Each structure stands twice: as structure tokens, then as C-alpha cells.
Image 1 (cartoon, rainbow, N blue to C red):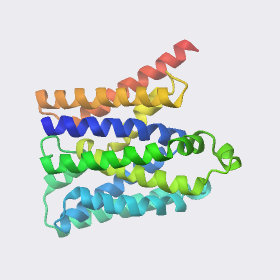
Image 2 (image 1 turned 120 degrees about the vertical axis):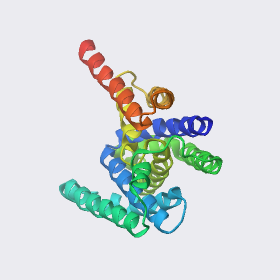
Image 3 (image 1 turned 90 degrees about the horizontal axis):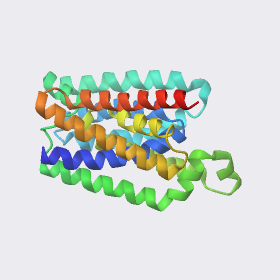
Length: 257
């Protein structure tokens, strides 16, 4: 539980920050796509006798840039998502089958594992989270500008193509790291719902980040506790808590307007 809370705290912070940019850039579809690619990467890692996180990192980082280019045109975005989702989900099942692993391994990858995080994995998550935070700090102004005013950023001479690549890489890192707690299927919950809720309560980017981090922390901390008490999947509680926060935000917005 100590390992889960330490890792969960870092994951919530990263997800809250990255989620604001995911919402700002209208890339919720990409976080969902990377979660499925993360499953395939983790399965490949098991097949190669690697730590699952290493396989996730390899697949998500390489594919994030490729997907971003492939789905850049809205006319072919949905078809690209469907095709690549099917390919990677099928590949993940194939890798697990070739590795002769049972259903519990697939369940752990898809839905996370609260008690399966070792001290070494906690250290790896902490270092990767620190790397993400450092990168965000270095490109914060340009990334914020490009995410919420793309045309203005281009006019001001911001290298939007480079910023997009950097963002895709840190998104891939975030997906791989966060999947350790909530699993690859539900990672987009932490990457989208807290930030989507934040936009109804605050109007600034920094305010959205603070709210999103708080909402993500509440979901992770309370979800871990409820999972420990009930022995139910942690990912279920995290998803339900974040959904409650989001629907509360929608109700608040309707009442206010």
C-alpha cells in the first residue's frame, strides 16, 4: 500500500497537469489510443521477459508521434483510430498467447495492480514522473500558448511542430506511468476527466492544473483506500470517483448558467 500511494500520488500529479493540455488540444482520442497501445506494449514486454513498463514505454513513445501524424487530418481521424486500435489490441492478445501467460496477466495490464508494484517500479515511476515535470517546465509557456491558441502561437513564431512532438512524447510517458495503477484501459479516465471538470470551475490554465491535480489525487487516494477495504478493483473506484466529479461539474455549470 505504501508503494501504491507513492506511485499513485505521482501519477495523479502528472495526469492532472498533462490532462489540461490534452483537453486544450482536443486530444482525448489520442490518450485513449495510447492506452490500448500501452496494453500491447506491456504484453510485448512480458513476451520478451521485460518489465511491462519497459514495453509500454517503447510502444507508446514510438507510436505516439506516428499516430499524431497519421490522424492529423480530421477527415481520416476516426478511421485511423479504429484501424490502429484493432491492430494493437490484437497484437497484445497475440503476445500474451505466445508468452504462455494466463488471464491474470492480461487483467493486471488492462486494469492495473495495486499490490503488484515493487520498490523498483516505484523508483522507475518517480524518475519518469520527474522527467515529465522537467520537460513541461522547460516548454511550459510555448506548450500553453500552442495548446490554447494554436493560430496565435504560429503567428508569434512558436515552433508548433516541435512543441507537438514534445507533447506527444510526454503524453506517451504519462500513459505508460499511470497505467501501473489504473491499467491501460482506464488511463484516459485520469488524463481527461479531472481536467475536463476543471474547466467548469476555473478559467486559467494554472487554476485548471490545480483543480485537475486535486481531483486526480482525490480519485487515486480514495480509490486505493476503498480498494484495500473492499478488495474490489482500484480502477473501478477511481473511474467512479472521477465520473462523479465530472457530472457534478456539469450540474454546477448548468445551475450557474
